[in-house]
Image 1 (tube, rainbow, N blue to C red):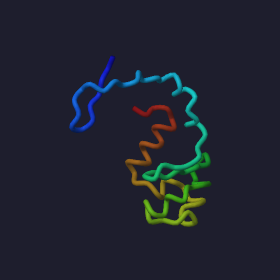
Image 2 (cartoon, rainbow, N blue to C red):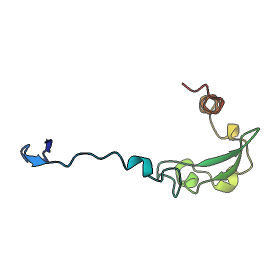
Image 3 (spheres, one colour):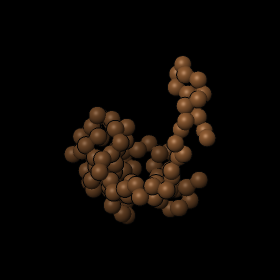
Image 4 (spheres, one colour):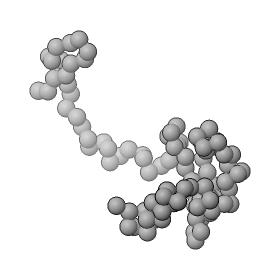
Length: 94
């Protein structure tokens, strides 16, 4: 049996086996919130215009949602970030 030690303890405390079988039932495909360190953009083809954006945009990037809605995301990202996004969308992302 595996054991673990907290700070200052010896290695003699039993640890339950890790059960990964529930991971496939995690609702990560159902977004309920944006992580505090991220921004969610919904983009419209063909020019990747911002059609929706999360409220976390303002504190993280200093822009209000109204300032970015209906603008091409290429105007909001630096050239390298936009190239990475295009590569990922085209399936050639490494």
